[in-house]
Each structure stands twice: as C-alpha cells, then as structure tokens.
Length: 393
Image (tube, one colour):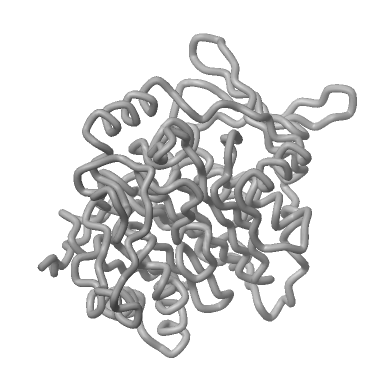
C-alpha cells in the first residue's frame, strides 16, 4: 500500500517473517510489531523508499547486457527462509536485485539468524559483537563492504552506503562506525544478555576454545594475555583449519538475486567467528571470498571457516569456472575440492547459481548444508539440503 503525506511517498510493506509492518521513508525504516511497539532501523538512502524505479546505485547498463523478462531469483545459504521471503517480496516491489540482497540479508540481521548474523551473537575475546558485510552489483562490479563494524546494527546497509556514497570498496573498525554515523545510522549496543552470558561462560572455561597458537601461556589451557613463542622454523607452518568452526558457530548468510532485467547482485552478513581475536575480519566482506557475481555468468556465496576459505577466493573461483563453461554444481565441487586438498579439516560450504537459475552447492565436514531459494517459476520458498563430504582427518 502507498500513501502520500506532505508530498512524501510512503510504502507500507508487510514482511512475511513476522506479524508486523515496515514503514520505509527517507532515512529510517520504522518496524511495527504485533504489540504496537516500534524499532527504528536506519537506512539513510533513497532506494529504501521502495519506489518502482530502479535504485540510483544501479548504473545505466547497456541494453545488450540485460534483457526484459529474465527469470527472477533469490537464493541464500542455510535454511533462512524468512530472509529469502523478504528478499523476494522486495524484488517484486522494486525489481532491483541490489534491494533484494540488502533487505534479505537485513532480515537475518533483525532476526539474529542462528545467533551468527546481526547483533547479540559471536562475542570476541573482549565480549564485544562486531559485524562484517558486503554487497556487490554484477553489472558495474561496484562493491561496498564493512569489516569489524562496531556499535551499528545495520551492517549490510552500511556496506551499501559505502558502495553508494564513496568510491572505496571497504571500511573497517571504528572508522567504519564513524562513517555509518555520518551517514545517519544510529549507534547502539550490539551486546545482549545472551551474548554476555556466552562470553562469561567462555571465560569461566579458561577461554576455551580460542584461536591462538605459538604463544605463552598455553592457549589450550589458559586465558591471555599472551606473548609469542619464537619459532625455530619460520619457513614452514603446518596447514591447520579452525576445528571449532562449524554450522553452529559460523552460519554467514550469503544471498544472490537476479531481477527481471537480468541484473545480478550478491551479498553477505555475519557477526563472525565466536570468541575471535578482536579485529579479526573473515571472508564474508572480502570480494571473491564471501561472495562474487559476474553479469552474464552468475554468482557464488560462501559460508564456514572464513580464515581458511578466504585464502582460496572460492566464490570468484567458482564463477570463473562457470565463465569457462562449467555447470554450477561442478564449479562448486571443484572450488571446494581445492580447499580440501590443502585443509581437509576445514568446515564450509559454497553455493553457486548461473544466470538461468541453475544451482549447485558443495560442502565439507558439515552434517548436510541447506539452502533456500525462490524463482519466478515457484509459488513459495523451497529448501534443498546437500550431502557434504567428510574429509576431517
């Protein structure tokens, strides 16, 4: 429904994932839940007016690059079906793949999907929750990303603001927070009672597990602060994966959308690895690692042990394999196999889709990897679960 107030155009968009509505206008989205309470979710961008015109950030693309009546698609990692529904709903309103990816990932940030997306999850060694996110536009190859974002909940929207309002690709840490505040996003505490309890339980268990090695005191028995132990062999370090990374510890949402004009976009959002070393940024906001899209080819998104996966830029690898003629399923398996060859203990998954809506996925050391999607041929969101290899040895 659309209403006009003082010549402003307002859209009331019911989101399918909760009993409420979102009023979107100018800087803020006001979320009304079924009790009548409200929450302000800042966006500070004109594209959040959900107007019928395509967002300003999507540049004019040569008509040879896009076609009318493309099969629309929204697909994302894990069984985050509410995110898929939110992205699809917006896609029908704005016909913008970028809007679909942003709002779909935002839905998971609001819901704190599995505790691994958004505020109130995965506290670092100091107990603070920080966020990583990225968004990529296929036609232009524009990217916006944030890493180690602090005290701002709307990570995917800040990433899009980086893409829209700067010529940079990525901002990190407190400086990313300063930029977000400058863009009109509200500052808030990302810690919740739940995340605080997770942190206190971890401290009570002698800070186990953690991500330190070659330090003293023994990180397998004690908390820090730590000091380095000089290595006698600086030329070779054993290739090891983070054995504490699993489905329950790192469920990044990665999403890809294709709109009716054939424009493809991709994005990610996560709060990273639980008990990470402060300042750590994983693969999710890294172009080609967490996500990658190529206009006319397709896209890929990754989830899992980001510290290992980012070393292989698997999303970029899979899309390049598709550009050479490989099918999505084979591209996903080939890209993941390259990681397994070096790090058989790693846990993670890769989701790949081409411009025709053909999908494929591959995973390792996970008890099944689900992904959800909807296309213009479907009447509802569907879920597929992929059987994973188990090379943990």
